[in-house]
Length: 481
Image 1 (tube, rainbow, N blue to C red):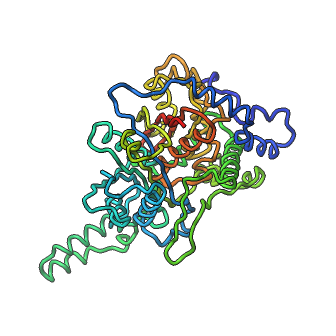
Image 2: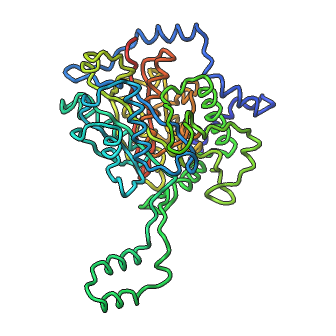
Image 3: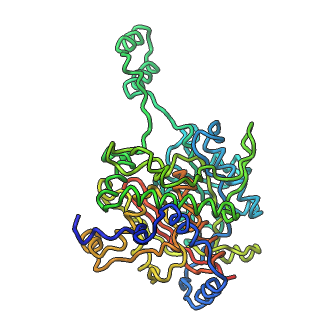
């Protein structure tokens, strides 16, 4: 790595003169959420002076509201459910939250990654289960960790083109029960047996059976093109950007501490209770677990052993959950008496090398979406980035703040700049709240919209990386109060 690229640590810069890392980390975690009334007033006045991103002759598209089920660690309260159960719960929660008539919804789109084979179009099954008309079309999309991002932007396209006025977009993932297949040889033998017409043919096929045919095929969080797990890629990325284990643990502690504070203060208002059949009602995320740097330091590397820096503590965990947002043409929302939460503005999808730049989607997408919207980093009041790994987030922040990286890898003259940490993921992120692959995008958008309302900002930037070396970024604009 070029020497110019070995920048001073983003998170340990202020540690030099502080004696107690744990106390510093706690203060660092709390600072972004404790703004004074004077700062809030200043933010409000600044908001009034900014331009809107409305474009002539193009429909304004708004998010009326959004909800999600509590995000839970896989193998806990949702373990006996199916994905469409969670998606149905998100849809039912959205109906309850918004009181939107079911027959007003023109279309439903859900994102998912690991599909349950019995409900391959989970959007349709969930919609029927939630009581939507069988005349309401629904389809399912998949784009790894940005699947519900794709669901939302597909909804934007349908509304912008005049095809629809009201679309529900969402996402779901149930990692507690993933499809496990027979080996290919076993599958082929079973299919051949099904086609065999005589006893002799069946016996001939069975005679070829071997015990190793019974070895199952398990799905893995890995790249098909490189056969490398995402955690392994994150470890290499952290090493390439000279991000230490301590920095990664500090960032993870920040995420969990901010999420816990937001949860305790009732800021995670998009979470709706879900009565799990045969179990108690689930009311909040259960993966938020602030620890200490000492405890986190005791964990062994999870992927590259024994020298890796990515551990269970600084990685997002396998999560079950679902989300849904109500997206409308502005004129339709106002005609129905709604007060929208935010506009959905410009967005951008990017892709790059899935081997060495698998998780750098936000770095590539951010400058492009800002340029498309005519904004700069200084215009953004709220940042909501997906946290797959601490190392992934910190690598993106370093890359975004590097002229060298911009010039050598992105073909740009200068860096886009560093998102101010006091505006960054202030209510926690995927490391702490959880990451149901197909559902995270909607959570990010609702976090940005709700933070803009709470903090008095105007523009939010949502960004995420995804498997396959892809990424997404979107501008969310607060709806005028």
